[in-house]
Length: 522
Image 1 (cartoon, rainbow, N blue to C red):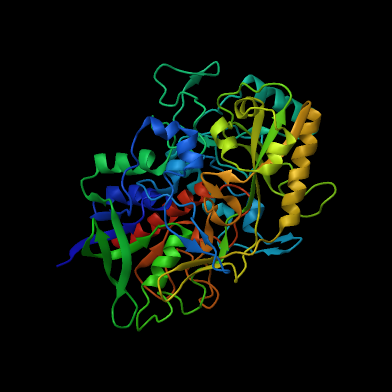
Image 2: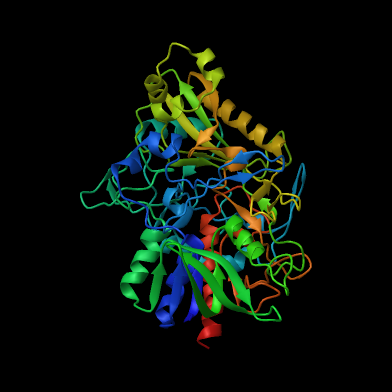
């Protein structure tokens, strides 16, 4: 026996949760399938050893690269998806990101739907996820129909000094747009503020639910208000079934707490994340789709992108007593520089380093550089930055599924010269900001190695477009080949830009939800 719904949403991260929240007022029966459970609320949520070094909240799955080397992907299977441990930096893609952009290593392709279509949904996404920011500060921000819904998160004294130094250097630092449940007065949280401006925001699960993640902003409120919405946890969507012609999804096969179950719906939406959605389609191969569902183009799993990323720690001579550090960003080099005609990327701050994280790096070069400095002292003298540059979609950068069920992620980095130049720009700006001892690369973040295991910004794999031979999804993010299968995670991205992708995922999910709403409730 199968239970039938109007809409099944697979995945409760930003793409699935935002869509379900949007559709819930229709009164249609909606089932959300989440392979994980609620992330336990515990003091360990704020422990750097637990979160970063032990990787306690990261999946223990084993994947392989093209050489057969093992690694653990940086995926988190909880209600709310990866947003439970994201940094909540919620940027709009720049307007030019939707156009063809020339990079040193190739072309960032044009999007078939442009910024003007996404803009009203960006505005709704910012309201839905309580984004704090200030229009007009970011020199490369796209045009907007209105202000941010909440004022910017204030800088602490040391970050305000850094911002002033960057400004004197000719840069245009701005307040990082953050999804956060924070009310503050004179730089301090009010007595009733959910967020308390602690030092465990970026990358940590929030013990107080003060981070605007998909569970807090969408799943829990939707379940409380709409009895027509059901959430299944610990439910792994193993495969999708189709009719004999392969034109319609007829069932979702689920393993829940070790028991096999089957569910049906008029509309099925995959929002598992770019990597997991591609794997779901590949696992679901059948006679009508022998190489994976909707894969007649051989594009399922291809064009994987995840940004070229670095976490850098500036080691300062003077102590940095900042508690909530993630408030500042610099985009001056996003589309180029005086000495480089191609895009470089985005500089933003990340959470304050803790001694356990530094101890867990296991980098011999650090120990030889300052062998006598205690880790606690290094942490107190650190200032931390996250750098993102665009990596370009490559057909050979892909996720595949072997006959024996092993998952292979093939990734050959590209466009790295731009990223190295971005590092040099930060180093130059920091050298003018004050005396510092070194700028050190961090290889450990969220218990993973960034180059391959770092999948926090996963995108591509099921790109959308008008040509069914070159894309998997149409402009409404419905698969070209299957009439009732949609995708609302970052799989649809033709390119990734150099800003965090989550706000675009949310905006697109709202856009697709409006299309589905017309279809199910004309």
